[in-house]
Length: 264
Length: 238
Image (cartoon, rainbow over all chains, first blue to last red; front, side):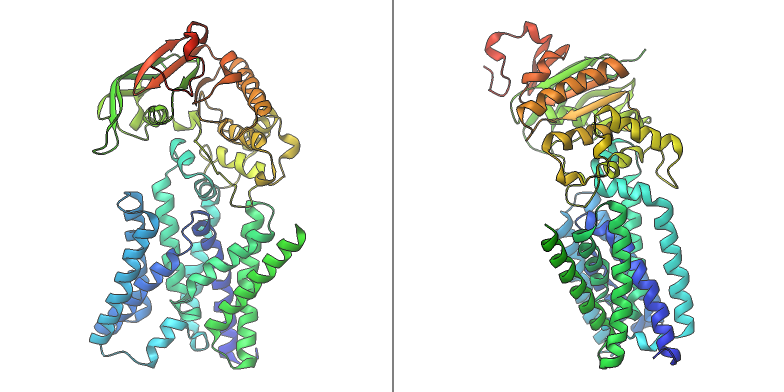
């Protein structure tokens, strides 16, 4: 399997995404915003459509749209213009509806679109891998440096605000990192499935972890494991990689829940 | 020396809603242990949120250590325990994780230094949870969880400790222990304490000053001077 260049590239890109998605997803889950990834993903879909329409690589327009969508959700939430889930709903539906209209206008309602919606890891090029590596590792470095402040806000947002932490900035940053993760991971699992990779490993890890740091560590292991195992299964079973990776993540979650139930 | 807290002529309502506080004047000196009591919905929590600069008064001014509460800069000097707090109860956070989060405002970025770890150890020691530091918070009793939250508030070495309904869901024995703990912290650290509750009991023994709030301040003085009729502030007052 690893004799093939495209599989080696797929594993390398998948490994970065497998680590990055749960590392960022951890903070979304703690803030009870597990579905934000989905909302941003739908806006990224509109971004893909814009890319087709203006003839620019959809990866970049999707990344741009994801960042705008994430900023929108955070703005609505922070200003209390809408409750977290309502802010998400507005962005979610606007994104998908805008995407459908734009993509139709671009005449791109075709099979190529599927690659963005559900991933096409087997077509990752060396250039793609370089972009994924630089952005992914950069995002991980930001999380590592700001970890203590991010955890403090995730555990107790109001306490952090009273104590003078830059809560709005840190929350905005988490949303930006989520957007970046989605942009980077789009080729691997697709914009409709990436949110699962940000959430499933984290909620699985919560079942078996014993502290905040162990939750982060185990969720990264679960994320990485899901991507690598999912890719292997998809290769030998001739299955779509994105879906297989996410279903592996679901299986990990079920096993972790079982372990928790037995341990009690 | 500036007052720890000053509210002068403060009115407040949420948006277009009814007036929650009217004409509130409250001066708290540094080092005081003040209990703020009153019926549910009487405006106690709102008063605290104004004091912490989380809300803007519709009229009047709120000062923390002589500065406007909204733009108060030395925020790490405030230790705050919010009402019905659920910090770290959903996540698998240990007691130590929670207390370390209280130290984050002092050093939010990079690695923990030795003095941070010492501050965390000291806070755990003060509330008597050193032995349970590695336990998951959700596995502790209500009283122990409250002590962990107080340790979190202490980790940044505050000069003002603000506790909103810290005894909710805590049994009577643990309430007594909490009262004694706050008394010790007040004596040992000289920290100013604002303690909000709709029920008192054990803490009444330790506070120097009781403020009753029901939209307005209806009593302000030592608990011993409180008319007998009012001794249980959870009941509404005429």
